[in-house]
Length: 274
Image (tube, helix red, strand yellow):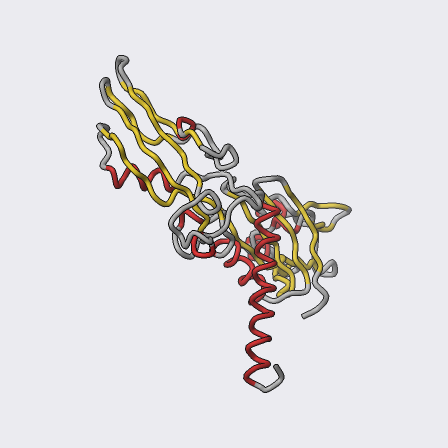
């Protein structure tokens, strides 16, 4: 591989879009899979139902609670299997949330994720407006929920990403000796990336190209060729909010590095170099 280079196109707490140069598809796909499946985050894993007179079965209610994204402190908790309590559940590996809602009013009341009361305010629902269930007059829900760190490869509730994908960096080549400036390609581009300037076609924001090749198809002169750079990728990752997207990327890099180091160690043992 060539020297790795990263160009950030967009970055906030929930979304990152960046260009990675000097890598191959094996590397970039490994990074993507680790972001999805091997970056730990908090999610409700067990629920103790004390009272539930709603229309939802206990199991369905517990499943809905598990899929609510929770904030994950950077260093506050350890994985249950690594905890000194042996996974029994303690303040080092488990966070409690409580739900106690009774409805005596008219009509129906919607119970939202914001009604969950965390024992640790750093492990609170990311969003307060996720509907859980509707209660009719006289119905109630009382429960305790237990959140733990986990990995997306074990259950989707522990996936910190809502979107994680990449594409090859598009390359649009214009042969000026063949281009007659007819403008057919400009009109055909669904993203509006092509412009006519001084009688020829100019390309802007090529990173947004979807590689549909519509411009190539309508160019009767064959002046446009759409392809891609196999060593450059446009990467998009969106967080559920449980972790900042920058933390997801950095943790995935650390996991990938640890895997590579372990592979080298095991390989050196096999070849007698360790």
